[in-house]
Length: 180
Image (tube, rainbow, N blue to C red):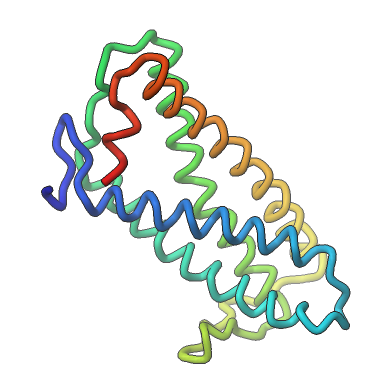
């Protein structure tokens, strides 16, 4: 299997980035849900926050690589001709997912660094705060982070449902193109 996409097939790097980003995003949303029910004094709160921030930076790096690879790489054509509304919806969902996978961790970065402190990346490296933000901007970043996390879950569910519909109802092999 080639590293790059062709007009009919996804390359292995596209597939790898797709699944790594998906696993990170779903894991981070699950961890975020877990964290919101913890009090500041809960023994798991600080560890959960540490991992959420660190894996959020990993997710941002993977998403940036995925977006860059998407821009420079050819995108395979659909396996069959689609009605205009499905072609439009497919492009819209993919572009929305690409944007959200960048915006959500960026908003998390601004939340985490709002006081001017950097983010510890697994004890190996500290990612510095670029700017200190006001409490008002921090609250906006929190709202963006939370609501867009719900949004990406809904759109990911739509994306998965469409892939399953294409695979099992239309039987056009769409899903298998993204599997190994």
